[in-house]
Length: 85
Image 1 (spheres, rainbow, N blue to C red):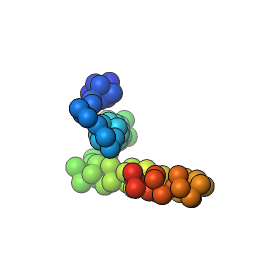
Image 2 (cartoon, rainbow, N blue to C red):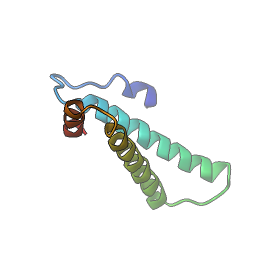
Image 3 (cartoon, rainbow, N blue to C red):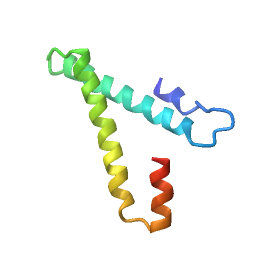
Image 4 (cartoon, helix red, strand yellow):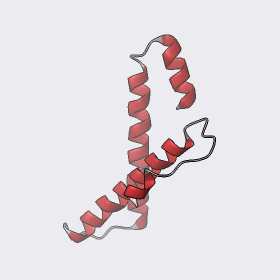
């Protein structure tokens, strides 16, 4: 699944929807993988809600880091990036 995500594109992609979709797929697969590792290697039970919370945490972390990185950009570049984000 993760290998095939790189091939996803939308026709007339003007606002980087394909990139966002690929990132969402990659983060979802990562959260599922981390949950599976917790179950199989650490022998801990995990609920679907915990996997969902992990995914939300990963997405929140990505957005926070993106916002923090924008603080160091030039003003006009920062405004464009904020609109994209």
